[in-house]
Length: 314
Ligand code: FPP
Image (tube, rainbow, N blue to C red):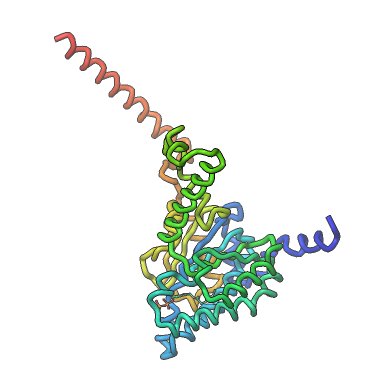
């Protein structure tokens, strides 16, 4: 490996010592082997934060952008692989006053231009999900520039959901699946109908095809989703991907959210028992508990067989 690369890898190896003393106190009680791979955050409460201080809403957003950077840097210090932030929804775009939308676009642009150096210092790679092609072209250009400028980083991937809506993402994925099938029928020189009749729709479209066509195709599903400011809603965010995510809601408003609170959410996550629809079988006692269940099932089957036999011979 060239020496400039090896020193870069070394530089990013273990950065836990860069946490603040408050953060370190929480981090030390975490199990490093069970840090989530992917955390997604619904950043909410910027307007309320400003309202409480009799400030204009845009100052809440401005403070919210500061929180983004604090949280990203803590995430990178603990080597969180994936952090996805809901920065601007399709609904925000359609339903907020133009002046607020324009301010958010300007804030995003300034955030990216002002923080790319810090992203590189922290080995953070930028990515985006959403219908970003509908954003103003100068914002798209800055986004592209920030993505390219951080593309070689190997630490946390920071994904900003921009002009994002989960239902729209699923619609886009469905279109992608159909488009791929049409392309395949063209390759084979047959009609789509013929292609589907060969081995049936069921074997042509499964969950994997949907996943491969989501904006998040190259990411693992979030393990933990955090929502600030206390609302108990998912608000059209990553509906498919959070099927088994743990949900953590805090009353704290986004502009007051820091790396410490990210670590506290991880601590809560580590206290949860993730079963993915199955059962937790962690102790011998649990196992012993399940064994009689098999026996009971066998006994029931036995009795049913005997009853059927008796009925047949009446
Ligand atoms: C919700 O606050 C938050 C948003 C609409 C967008 C989030 C934007 C930021 C955190 C700032 C910019 C982000 C980046 C990446 C630069 P709200 O206005 O809905 O709050 P409210 O519910 O209290 O009114």
